Structures are given as structure tokens and as C-alpha cells.
Length: 106
Image (cartoon, rainbow, N blue to C red; front, side, top):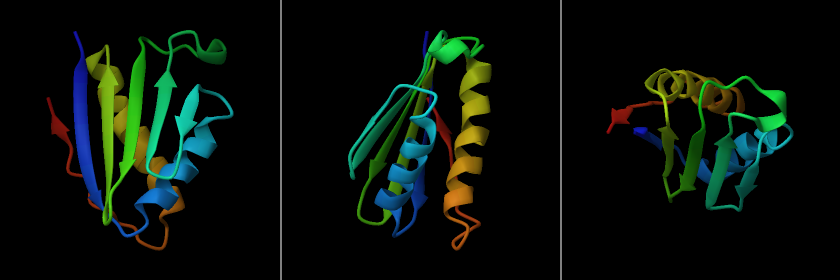
């Protein structure tokens, strides 16, 4: 079973934040990205991390929106990743904070 959440975050700097978040996590997690799309895999066995289950975060840069999707195999992990992702994006978007994170759970 998958636990999915998606947020559409209004920002003119979607591509910039996507790349910054991916570069930040690529030091410890499997990450692939370009200027328009990124994927971060929170694997149960990633570099000795003690994740409770696997999860994937995808980031898509649209013209004025950063679309973040979390697909987790545990509800608690999905909810925890929402907060982690918000904190990291807010760190890079300090000139724009507060950003609007309107998560939709599926």
C-alpha cells in the first residue's frame, strides 16, 4: 500500500528550489534531477539510514509552481517527509517564506 501526498507551492523560483533540495540530499540519498524534475529516494537501506520504509519524493518545476509529491510505504513516513521537505524548501526560500504548502493526501 502506498501513502501519497502532493503539494502545489506557488513560487517563481520553482526550478531553483528543486535543484537546491536535490543537491542537498544527493550527498546522502539516491537522487536524480534536472532543472524541471527531480527524484529523491528514501530507501530503507540508504547509507545506513534507519528509515522505517521506502519512500520517493518527486519535485516538478512549473512556470510559477513547485509540485512536490511524496509516495511512501508508511503513513507516518509520508507525514514526516512533509515536514522535512517544507523545512528544507523554506531554508532555501528564506526570501519568500512563508510559502503555502497545501498538501493533498491520496
